[in-house]
Image (cartoon, rainbow, N blue to C red; front, side, top):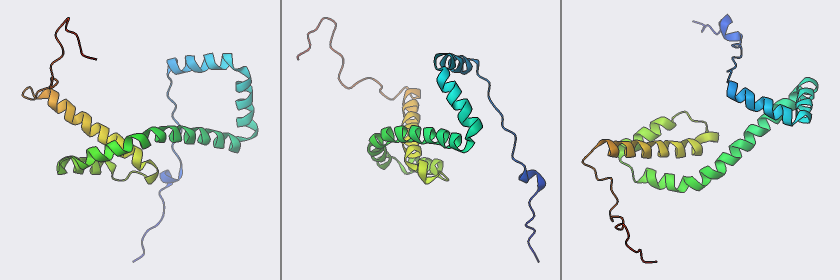
Length: 149
């Protein structure tokens, strides 16, 4: 018996693009356009005359943003790994479940974000339980008391 490999007609057509309309963002863009008319002319010509180059320009900016974010992630990764190692099996399973299906390109970023989310979840749970002490171990100095330097 042959397997039907025909694609459905609606799967062939891409969905139309949907744009968000944010007045605050539009104001910022208009102000930037007014301050940088040469940029407006350059990008208008770039899109019209060299659309492939315009695509590469947009992708390059995304890639630069990703590299910038990854510099911060690289600094946070050792602490996130240490936090993960100190977690209960349930917390580790929750983090692992949230990381399923993440592209390897974004794996470290997603791991740090999930570790931060778990830490936030635990902190919120501590605040919700009145029996858990939330005050510092050492009391603050009394008003007017001198602190040794």
